[in-house]
Image (cartoon, rainbow, N blue to C red; front, top):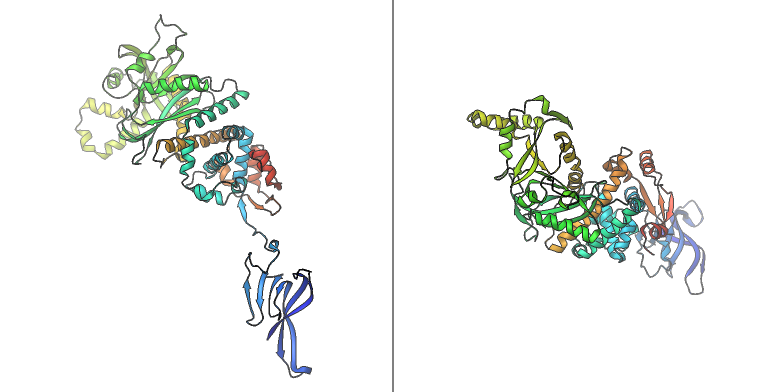
Length: 549
């Protein structure tokens, strides 16, 4: 038989318990001793928090069980809820020791402050809720490390949830109001104006010389207002939205973007972008790097080779154009092959780039009554490999070809033509074209790492808003990657390694950080960011994130 033994029970004037302890006493029959009963302490119950009048049931702060209820009649323990009216001190229920992923998001927050994007975003988004949502999506975009973890799932287990407490977690998975608001063109202009202004403080030439290109965003979303059936100079046709990016010439960082229906591949789009960024942002576009879909008669007329009477100060002469010639009627695409096919085996016109061997030859051609330099290339490695693969797919069809068609078949998979309004060697022109691969890297980063695709939005404002949010993430990611390239660290490795560092939020408002391992310390050191052992969350939010709390 068990009972509760109370020791030194003291009450306050209001009837609450001031002090006292208790134990479970077990009584057993023993005929060998006086009274025929033996008592022993079975368990210490600890401090008494509540006891009924008969001392048969109470709530105790047990040293082994925590806050618990014990009933001697049933000899059973039961849990006690936080809101139990018998408990007057809520501090008796300590916060559970939740360990939160710290290293990746803390690093990104500090880096955003270091590179100035925090200041740009804080100036551009005056409303705290909007600002916090932008930061939330930005940190998620970088820290998800190429995975498909949803924003709400990431946020719940990240240090970012402490820093941005007003973000509604339940809305992060599909935050339509947020993307709707981000689709406001005024907000986009405000951000890029502030961004360019900040960058020019340290680099006065930022945005002075830029180049423009576009990329398709194929998707199957019904009723997407920017979707259109598009064939942009290649063999495939698909439903597309099209993203246009303007990049700073020297850094490769986006300074503007726009989104258009996939079939609007004409010069008016390019001239509108050039005029728009010049008037709105004081950004000058000097170079056009265009795919075949943009090449048309008005483009050739605007950017043809300068004649002796052309003024060097003329608008069209101040800009250079490098584009891929479309393989369609009106352009000497196949004609150039027929004129130069005897030179292709000649080693005089051969050079190596990026592990491939190229044939390259420059020939001035007349297109729509205007002259352009046509740079004819054959990537011999691609021609050989892809030609072999296609022969093996259908050897009978290959054997039926004429000798002339077989010769064309052997080069067609590596054959391409670039047209330009400038005079350079074929090797230098190809280097210039490859240098524009910065923009392709930006496109690829956005599509593969930051998941620009799928778009999954159904109104014009939400499509533009999602892409605006994605471009902000892209700018931050490119700054981070540029910083890491100098020390030879892959961004994916940095994020993957630092995410192992955990923290604990204390009740006093301080964050306690566990001891980092060697690789995490090294990554932080390379970015010149210190790892604190403990710090005030409030001070971090005020000083780094720029939110008053």
